[in-house]
Length: 378
Image (cartoon, rainbow, N blue to C red; front, top):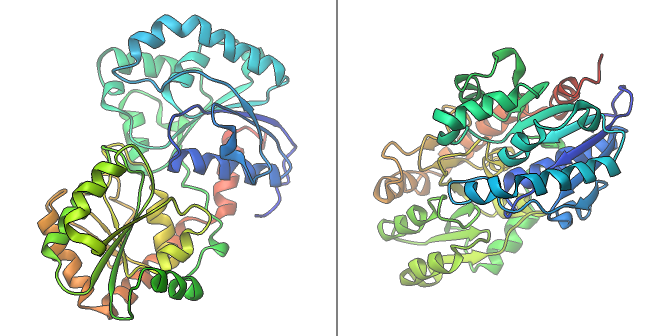
């Protein structure tokens, strides 16, 4: 990463979650890059180990579950106690130049705090606003709290549009894609050979990869069910973990060793993607800019998405495919057969997708946009 010429600021990122997904790790990667550029960065989180192996200082704070339909009543009752925890944590980090907030609970709570404690408040929106925040009382609370934010970073154009539609002034919302060190992400020939040997996949085996959190919102069931219509030497490898893992394993049992599950591949994703001939992405309704798509395209492997939401705008024409019938395993299998039978198509679309991703994900441009939102250029 290129070093910054801005003055150092104390940046406090408040991010609590029960998940270890793309947004959580993307934030840590961003904070680590800001440390490298000379900024003083602290992460307040209930999972300090997310920052393991980075230069980010992590402090533990527990604020309970994310805001949702099932948790809203409980969080309303606990709001005063949670505010006290946040106040104490921020007092320990004074002076705070920027308070960087990621999820709705923290965004709403911190809107109640005085500026002398928070410094400049900046929000990150990692995906489209939940529908509860787009209408009724949820929308009113969201736009009211957004008045305290100096800037909002939207991960994609679609995400930005939902924020503006909720009533936030457009000039406050900028598109800032995931930070990816594009120079470090490339095809790994050795990794391909090693992993395919571990999977007993021959040169002619058509390997379908899927990197995902194994949770109900992600439609990984569709990916597994597509195997019923894919004959021949085909292997599906699913990398990830989550509460739905055993249910998905049971669903895949009928396909025997044609479906393989492996742990999360963070740290060696390039090798995993390189070992695959195509990557499948089954988005949830609240996807922003999935890192699995970004990484696959940088490696040069085409992506097939099972639904447009969460992938639209990320898969360029001629650089992958979005299945027309949403979350339809038969339509997915039909599309995958086209890739199975056309190695040249896989090569050409992978190369095209990589070229597009190199244009749009320059890390210096991303970091400059973040620093601008943080008010570091006056």
